[in-house]
Image 1 (tube, helix red, strand yellow):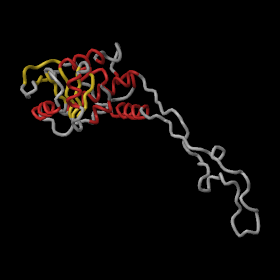
Image 2 (tube, one colour):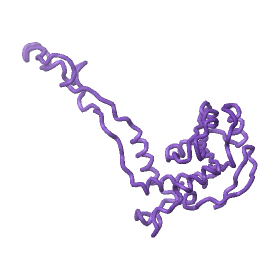
Image 3 (cartoon, one colour):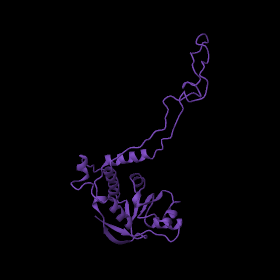
Length: 227
């Protein structure tokens, strides 16, 4: 697949070939959805905790006699039915982590990258380097590139000046190419990648999932073509 490479003034400087193994994969909705659910679940801390009736403070004595008061029978002050009592079936610390095969995680990332380029939302830049941190300069560059709503900027290696220049801009995020993930790619409208970042992505995820067949045959399902 051939794509144009832009300068920071949005002028086409050349065309490069990119790997179809990474940027030409049919969209598999089920795998992408599973990858999203897994990533969000693994981000949860799972530290929420409530006290049961055996853990809250308070007397265990019967509040009043069983009969003759005109009230319903009452037990301990720590009952979940009373204010200040324990919580029935409340959350306790737990792990929300989900496992997912490595090949499926890689396939999900390839699917969203392919969807971006298929929708015309991936732009390859010749390079993106700044001499010093300057938010105004980064805003000018993004305006020249036609970035309107939101954008994810991927560089081959962390660029300190680029990170500092973009961190105060709303709906703009920078990320090293090796840390690209499904949630970030889908959360931003445009994906800006330097040419070096594209090559880094191809180096990491460019190999096929299997030497003997496609990823779809490994799962025994037919990829969906719905974007």
